[in-house]
Image (cartoon, rainbow, N blue to C red; front, top):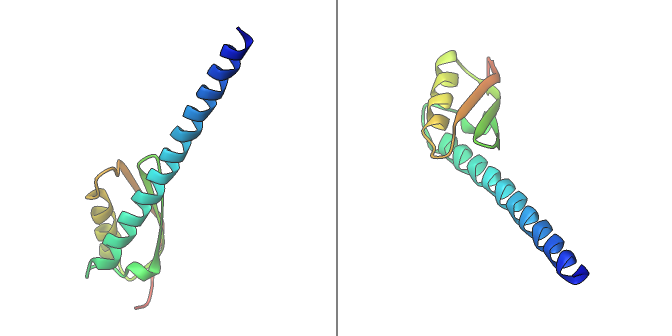
Length: 97
């Protein structure tokens, strides 16, 4: 009976570890997709923006030339599958190209 209990514990820990890995990998994949979209868009200076994602929430930091550029970055990020929310409060206006 003890062997079965240990095996179940090991299985549960393995599943939890795999779930954590998938979640973290998903965040990295989402971050990469948003960053690539910002770099590819002509309305946004993607090199001036940093992107982080966690559980579908994207945080954009950096500088932008105008409020319109910030709004465009937010709209681009929201257009990526898997993005639930975008926080652009850490983007400062006044970036140079």
